[in-house]
Structure formats: C-alpha cells, structure tokens
Image (cartoon, rainbow, N blue to C red; front, side, top):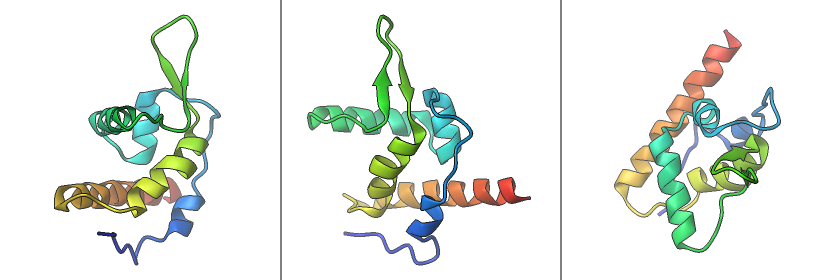
Amino acid sequence: MLIDFDKFSKMTLKTFKYKYRYCNQHQLCNDHGLREKTLERWISEEKDKGLTIPGRIKIPGVRSYIWQPEKFHDEFFVPKLFGPVRNEYERQEHLIILNNLKQQQKEKTI
C-alpha cells in the first residue's frame, strides 16, 4: 500500500537545508516535524530488524548519540515517508509529518 503524495513532491523534500552538520535528537525532530516518541519507535523497529538508522552516530564514552541530519533525511526519512505503509494509522502519521514539514517551510519563508 503506497501513499500518493501529489501535492507534496519529493523535490520539495530534496531542497531541505540545514544550518549545522550535526545535531541532537531533539533538534532533529523539531526540524523534521516529528515527535521524539515517533523517532524512538522507528529506532526500535530498525533495531528489531537488525539495522541502524543512517545518520545516527554513537558518541564514544557516553550513552548518547548525535545525528547527521542530511544523511538521515536523504537515506531514511524520505524513503520512509514515501515507502509502503503497514496500515491506515501509519499512513495518517506520515500525512501529519508531511503537513508539519509544509507548515515549517512556510514559516521559514515568511
């Protein structure tokens, strides 16, 4: 089951720019219109599959991670939003995230 996002093209997502090279999880979620709980669930789902989320970097010596937002965005976030969905709840979640992104981009241009 694929989501058809006619009004919000992938090209809009490809023009995403960041002011920084690395960020923490809170900043990453704010910039992508995500809740932190959603990102934590995605991390858990990928871990269950034996995979890691691109752009997530462990800081040696501490129990923290930093993120490369461009790598996360291009290799995980866009394919996740435009890929197959498991059910209608996940589809709705993806629509809400895209709407949050639209609002953020409009606010930045104003």
